[in-house]
Image (cartoon, rainbow, N blue to C red; front, top):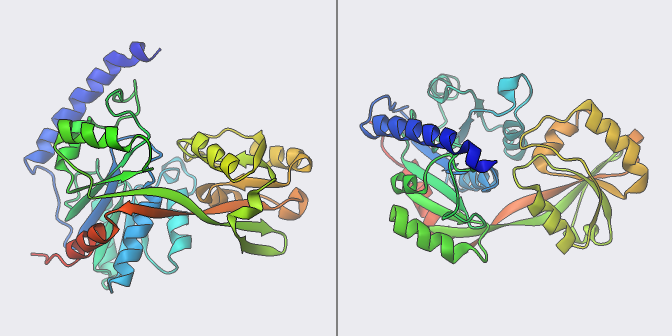
Length: 331
């Protein structure tokens, strides 16, 4: 089946190359008048972009800056809420989260409505080249075999690996067994070396029930039979982590990345709740599920993991580069 998609991938690749050549010459690139730090990737989903955006934003706040987050807002374009925007807004109370496919316009509007904001974190910005950036952080998933990866729609690459050459900083995520092969291939094809390496861990689990929410350790999952609904790019990674922590997936409701929670899914949760100890969802699923589910009727708690980054290398180096970029003087 994938070979049948190869002609489409060749056309896609040619279009990407033409577009990049135009931007490489500076055509259409706009300076927004405020430092911009972009966080992006070259593959579809699963690299850990959301926790990295939040790590960068938190580093800026601790450094005395007043950041805003700008993103396209997947889901919002289809008339629904943007799970990423809601997740960011819930994580940083009072921090402007700008949702608009036209990020140049949204940043311009922010400078009028929030003149105190002195730096913008561009969520999923590597391919959004219209916005000039002062730091271009690109995430590469160590679990992906880059040598065998193919462009969309045949594969999951949004751009060739060689495009990493234009990044200012490459960060290897999901650090583990595939890391050294990924580093070697990136160095050979794009001439880049990761400035930092990290992995994703669950530091706690929040349990939502009729009486409110409480935070517990991940030990609460041991021996727990759960119903999962995880609308992420790589649900297998979440299921593997649940198994490592001693949980059993009794029922799984498959969902696409960023997929809206449907009434049918909520009804399925009600139907299967009697056979499980809890419902388990990701944070970006919970912000969409929360307004729809009757926790009294559900009868079991909804468990949401607290996902964070654990750096295995280069955290201080990356933080220093983020803060230096935020101090860029605008002309």
